[in-house]
Amino acid sequence: MSNIGVDSSFLDRLKSKANIVDVIGHYISLQKRGKSILACCPFHMEKTPSFHINEAEQYYHCFGCGDGGDIFKFVRKYENVDFMHAVEIIAKLAGVEMPEVVYNKEIVELKKRKNKALEINKVAAKHYNENLFSEAGAKAYQYLTDRGLSRKTIIKFGLGYSKDYHEMIKYLRKLGFKDSEIVDAGVGQASANGIYDSYNERITFPIIDVYGQVVGFSARILDNNKQIAKYKNTAANITFDKSRILYGLNNVKKLKQTDGINEILILEGQMDVIKLFEAGIQNCVACLGTALTKEHVTLLKRFSEKIVLSLDGDSAGQKATFKSIDILESQNLDVRVVKIPEKLDPDEFVSKYGKAAFLKLVENAKTGTEYKLEVLASEYNLKDSFEKSKFLKQALEILKNLSDIDKEIYLSTLSKIANMPIDILRRNLKGVPVIINKGMPVSAKDEGEKQQEVQSQVNDGFVTARKFVLAALLHKKAYASFKEDEYFDLVDSELKKLYELIKQNIKVGDLYNYFNEEESPQIFDIVCYKFNFDNEASEVKFFEDSIKKIKLRSLENKKNIINENMRTTLDADNRKKLINEMNEVLQQIKKIKTEEI
Image 1 (tube, one colour):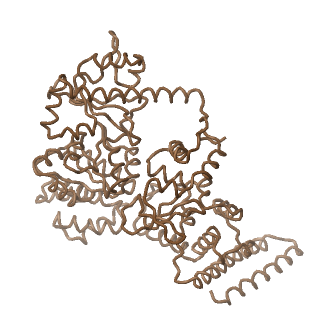
Image 2 (cartoon, helix red, strand yellow):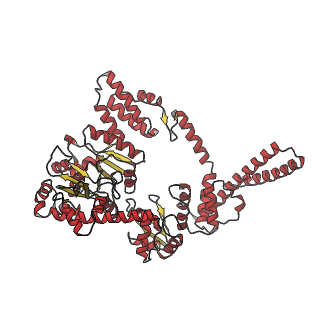
Image 3 (tube, one colour):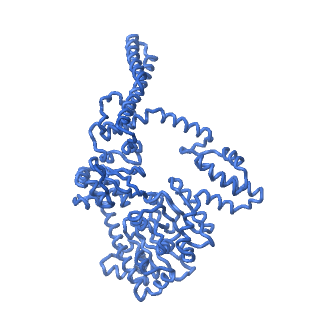
């Protein structure tokens, strides 16, 4: 029994029934060219197809962005769902009945509660929306249209209205929902006199996750009453955790699937998202009353590597932007920042100047580091020597952890901002400790020497040769065989496992059952190896040369072991035996080295 809730034999049966070509063809258009099945990759923008499907081995690989996997990986990534959800989708597409999922009692109960809460949220969202278009919701509807929203957009986002403290509760009770279930979903709140509507007399904004489920609500008061909070979000519960939800991400997912996206804009609030959507800018999300979290970034990375921040320009907004830049850049995302003039919100700017003007701001967005330097500079009087010195010290702190190339780029920027010679800034920056992955401060020189050492180890030819030979064996190249098996003494446990699986004639697509792509990048470098050779003769020659390199490495290792044994042995007969072994190894090394490699 697997730990994911279904028997592993079912997954094997599902894979045999669900052809990867049919599954992927359900989502994107495929082209057949000879024996190859191609498509434009759905995971990055491209005009020329570089997305290949290997039907025989049941896996896909994009030579443009490097992504690859089996049917489960494709559906998980395309639908942005977890593994079990992907299994259910594939089973439905293949017409295979899902077995009963094995869970313990606590999980079964939790799943029932969650499903009930999602059902109540869905029913409530629909009824709130009906209220908005009723006589009781006229004032709320007028407010939204005054903000520039069309009826079509209001319906698209499912906006609604809570009439009072009790109308929704009575409605849900009539449908058979219990008070405890209504409270569990977050639509109701308990009090000494029973339960009441959590969003009473507010405009409601359903919060929809990437699976299309209503997981909670955000609700806005109609009048700007300073005595109460303008917005009220669902409290954390079984379906809603604001640190893991981004408003509008469900629309971004649809947009990526239909038209593709280059970037995602993070805005301040849901009205910004809706107003920009109304204007035709659909690649927008917003946090729900919380700072950007690592969980948010994990979600965002599935849809785009480029993130544009457009938060408020006040002091609090600048601090939030700084923190967001750090967390996004820590996950290797390309971060840009839009500075909106006149301290306007995005929706205010679009209302005043239009879509084209806002897109121009996005096009000219600053990088995260540029933004930080400009904001920092605005806090000091750079004509004053003392303040200028303080500014430069803080600015160099911002630059210290950048790559050498980025340091040079932003040193030039800093030089212009502060009117300071770049050589002086560069010398000062070199005195700032560099932080490497393990958290140990080292000098830039030490780090450079370390990188050179690592690079020399990689470039000795053995690593390249080993990768190529394993890839040739895995992909069943005609010239590749196991006749040199005795020389393949792999030390790495993962590569040993891969080698044994190759010898068992495993399908490439089935490797995804044995290795995790994120934890085993070297394995998937081999899976996705590009055989870029001018002709077959060159490829065969490279294979033969690679085998020689592997043989040499094996023999050198053997020589070192014999040397060590000779150094420590005191037995004369054993020493004589070792000398004979050494002579044999040396002869083999000499033979290989005299051949052309």
